[in-house]
Length: 412
Image (cartoon, rainbow, N blue to C red; front, side, top):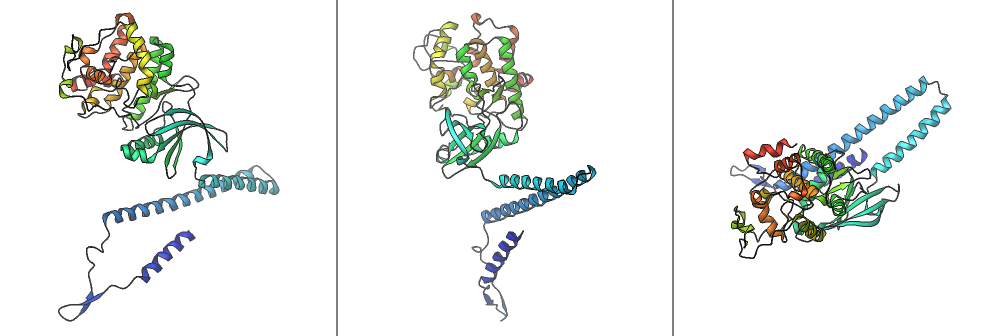
């Protein structure tokens, strides 16, 4: 409190040192105070800063007073328990001094600001458009975390600041066992750091690359846990918008957790034209809509082999893969939480069939197939999917309009 009084006393001394307001003579010969001009009035930005500073100071000292009251209550409770336990005065004094020392250390740790120097960077496990993810070890405790390091200048250049804020707010707000935990965040002049839970089980993309396809029981388990993760963020009015196998991580027990919120890789769809958004059967004929020869239809095994060769390259390319993007997102006509359920349907299809439902040799061709999904959504006979599995996929991969909206929602 003394520091606050000192600060306000300096503020008042500066205010007294300011020159007095000029007096002017009115038409009747009386002196009066000259009204301040419009240039002297504080701007809206200044008023907002003053309000924010006032709120910060009030919250700061309110928290300090609350902590002080809680410490007093804890001490009174401890003294009462010691008195009831018939402990000698010397033992009481030694115990109280020991607990006071521990509480002082705890308060010192609370005041300590975390920084990159508190962690030892280890192996890199991921690299994105404007950042990287590394395994790191906290020097003081030896605990292992995943450190996401984001370059500020690149975020500003790409206009991703709001996305990063959304990710940080979501991880701090949502408490769920199906979401990757955020432990702390800090920054320096060049980078923003997010210290998160490290999941050693890899991701769903790696699992699918290793196993090609999953059984329906395995897919049911992973899809169920993904449903819980999506539902937990939807309850807080967040949309993931970038659900794909490499964002579904596995912990050491094999449970699924959703990660990478708000940092979706933008797909360049500027080459898509209006004619690509109209349903057409010509794409499966001899020529595509742009006049190029159509890709010959492959068997499930041939399509699976082609997808295996290109999966990792597409996942880490600068353009990104559109295989899990909902049609309403590609059409850029507004979308809501339903787009996450579409992505889950595409992932479930890949789990059971071996490749995404609208996979093509080129991303633009995949976009056309997604927009015209009614023509291109087919289940290969070789996959031998059960009627229940087909029904759930069809209820996830459906129109977002009123008559079909209920189908996506009912899957929750």
